[in-house]
Amino acid sequence: MTFQDVLVKYGRAFLDKHNLSLHARKVFSAILHCRTAVMGTHSFVCDNCGHEVFMNNSCRDRHCPLCQTVSKELWIANQSQYLLNTNYFHAVFTVPDGLNPVIFQNQKEIYPIFFKAVSETILELSHDRKYLGATPGITAVLHTWGQNLQFHPHIHCIITGGGLNDIGKWTESSKKFFLPVKVMSKVFRGKFLFYLRKLKLKFSGSVELLNFKTNFASFIAGLYNTDWVTYCKPPFGGPSKVIDYLGRYTHRVAISNNRIISMDDGFVTFSWRDYRDSNTVKLMKLTADEFIRRFFLHVLPRGLRKIRHYGILASKDKKSRIALCKKLTNTLANISIHDLTLTDILVKIFGPDFNLCPVCHLGHMNKSSPVYVTQ
Image (tube, rainbow, N blue to C red; front, side, top):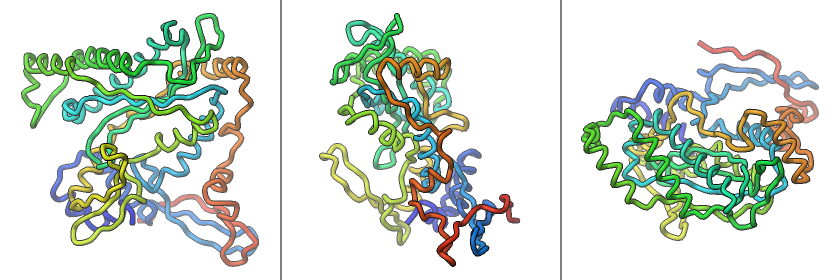
């Protein structure tokens, strides 16, 4: 059972009922037609017996549940070259529920300040000698969903347990998270709201009254008096665990196909984890229309980067800085994407015989013809 199956059966009725943006409609079409003849076709030929098969192309859309596995493995291979021999921590930054409709209606404007507030909070506190006195590496990933598919924007951060200090030496943190989460929450709140007040936003529906300056100012003041939740998960078992773990976050979509249990009589049933009930796995049954609607709440604005790097992982002078950090932390050389071919990636995912010829069982199926688009 896949999300594509749901769109095939109930998608047309959904489009007739809902006014999706042009960008969301393109995402809808990409997922609907992924790995079908509409996307074009390529052929594979056995290098031993000449047997030929045709396969349909993937849509490669970042929202598609079918298209993330290879992309994830390529990303993991690339990021492995930046791993350091140090502890790593996982922090999560969330905002109060009252901000959700404000963010949803102004995603293009607010997501950048979300990243900015998160990264500045970590870097400024880390630079304080009371906590670390150095600049760590940060990989930040935006998610917009909760387990029940409702809109719940938050940012996951993987942070090195140490960093470069002002004189170019490596400073190692304690094995426990080196930044107090209550302090992080307050600093993050202040920065986020400071940047939010500077934006020119437009509101409609349930928050339409925020278009009035006095109402918006009162709304912001109320958020200053609200506790913001920032928390840190337990540290990883070691650097080798980090990239695989992070890869699951970077290329995760709103719902994976293995969580969709069934669809019948206009309803879709899927599994979800209730964090408020001891992480109990439960089943949720929604109308197909509501299920599809919730999925499309999480289509990101076109061109938005949902994965960003800061500190010693920032793009400027990254290679030379990481080379220095590896030397200072006694990090062994890592395999990078330049050492891996696509075949290597596919072998990792599907096993060594993934392209064995189904006819002669001796040769291997190799791509032979260019992609063409069917009419």
